[in-house]
Length: 149
Image: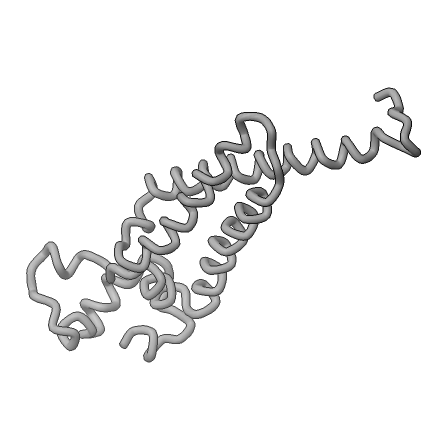
């Protein structure tokens, strides 16, 4: 109901206030007690859309999709050292987070942001290191000869 009335969102961290003051919680049949009326909607995708509009939803999907795409791209490369073992775990973490936040609003907690940012940072670092290593290997060889580096 909030998304239908406010397609551009109600503002960041304003869902609980708008849902209670605007009567959306009462129309949805949410029980009138402190623990239920102060909690945001459990689907993070709906929450982001209600607070930031469809532009915010597109941004969240682009953020998660880019990290998942980078994980699949890094997974195709053969990384001979220990960093190659990190990629499947980090990719699985990104996919599980993307699925799990459709059932839980825990993504709005700052601790989860730290974990997601750490996982994303490690994934980007592993990908950049592999790209640098592959790029460096092709630049070193020329016409069958190995050039000094």
